Length: 124
Image (tube, rainbow, N blue to C red; front, side):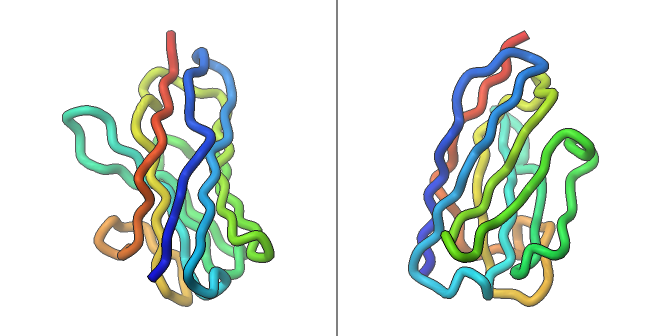
């Protein structure tokens, strides 16, 4: 059983930066594809970014391309999401997700482990 715990959310002004982190435990982290999703009030959960088990491949949602960067540290069992040039529409609860897989995964249904989420609020 894999446990995921997010941290690093908070309040930031538009144009600012924030990094959220996800600590994983309970499995061999380097065997898991990892992803970040977000969910704003009254909206469906949205794909943000994904990274392959080795970290060699990444993929991003259209709304965050060029602004967000996903990375991982397999030695520390951590995955990160660096968010730059933040906009008010980036305001959401951000969730870390994981799945035992050889390739990256970009759909919510593709993941079976989820963290509890961390709130990111971007003020205008």
